[in-house]
Image 1: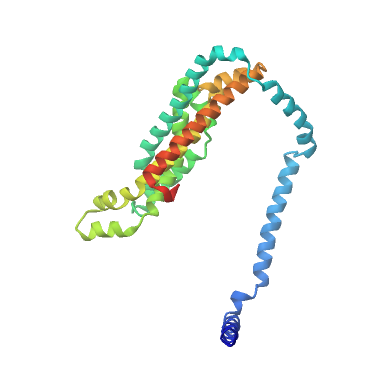
Image 2: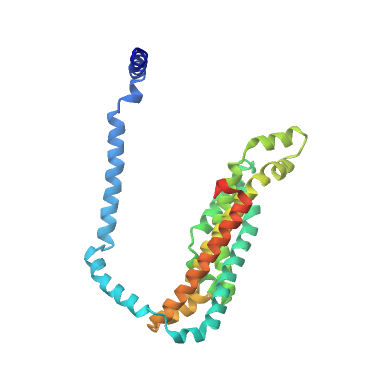
Length: 289
């Protein structure tokens, strides 16, 4: 009991000393409180303004729930006649997966060399670094759906426009992610290659690239999974794939056909997610999963 009491007194004295010598760290400053309150108030004001300007209404949401329930009721069960078109829909789904896969791989191939110019620890030229970064930001700022509309007007309707749309949108994202992975790489392997007499290119090749390749592979797998859903959306505007069939069935109010198509997409995404998880586990290891 005595020992515990002495320890408590000792820690109490240390706490008092800390508070006395570092009062600024323990006592909240009025200016900091005002700054936090101002930021919170500004965010709350923006939120309220946005809700008012966008005519946000809980009445509309709750009023539409009944209609949503009616649509779900019309979707179930899937129409047995839909199975007669299973081969057609299956081919369209395979086309969607091909669009996502090719678009993702093409984007990765193009973005990988660009990421060396966007990485600050690889590219010593500030001017080239700045313009590469801003170029990637510009490409990334345009949504996949907008890229699809652009490429449809350039190359026409079909899956080729979908591949180009996925590729264009992902180049900016991959360039940013790959360059950030390079900037976060450990400097010790680079210093080791340099100390052994290696050139700058060899330091990058043997010191940085082996570190970032597993991360890059994981990012590519994730984007392939995400782009499967994106390829479905851009198919609605004429970029090929199962999205075109989905759009037609919704437009003609064939809700049982719609439910069949949605079920096919969900199964495909679940399978891809499972395969991607196993591949990421094999590439990176259990700690990163």
